[in-house]
Length: 205
Image (cartoon, rainbow, N blue to C red; front, side, top):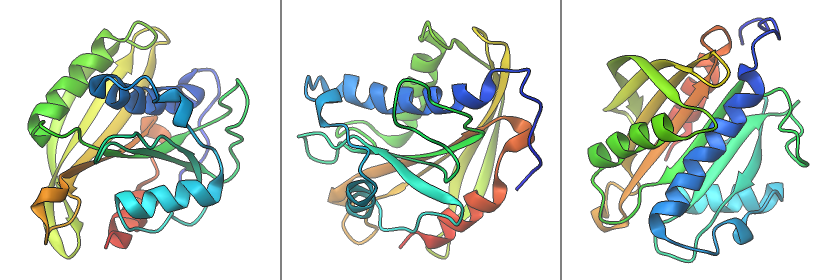
């Protein structure tokens, strides 16, 4: 893992806030009023939701943080954070890197969802993401090449730089009816944890 970056920028805590926005947006697009009520920070339950959503292993040094299962088919959201981070309470803490696993809402193609997500993050008044570059990437998941998108930008409300890697893949390659998943890795450019990215993607079943 990279060395800690100076704390002058407000990006660390913003990473968790931005990560939770991804889940909030998924909830909003389903129109479910039960979204926030169903939030759980129980580690065992979060692991259970993760396994239902995408069988995989939490990377070394990380822990389950929050789960937002929705009462609609294929609408779930899980956040993983470094073990040193205390998520409970109003302060998100120092979060240099966040992993989010989202079920793409039914009826939306992966590419369409990614485009909507970029627009939502740009319009979010608490963050106002300004995208500065988008680079197609290829990652290995389940022994096959999978398309990914690397995004570099700035959260204009805090002037904090941020880096995303978004990976879309089928929830179950043997059952396309299960739908699609978006895995979002995000952090400051200096503290982007590539080892955690590689470990998590390698663990996906």
